Length: 147
Image (cartoon, rainbow, N blue to C red; front, top):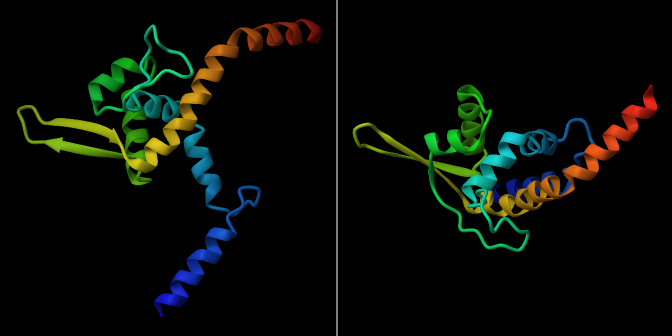
């Protein structure tokens, strides 16, 4: 029976195709392409803004409290941050640790799976920051041609 289950899982995995409407990987792509997910993964991965924000710079992942994340991610609402953190925990990308202090201390930290995704999101964030001038110029040019 275990062999059958393993074979079914292997077949299902081989059949993941994000181009198919019913593929569950589409839901995952939707989640990880969210700006707050990218920024949370970068923050927990140690990619906080500083002078060494270069593509090859080495950053150390660290646990962060909810309030630290909230301050770092300018513009995120409390509801959105909470929902995003819960979803990332459910997907196994981060862990939530509650320490019984007064008041209670809650920290978030990347799992191995989250860290593997962080390496990709760091590059994506850096690309966006590096090429923003070009994108803005292209938008301006395109908008000028539209009139």
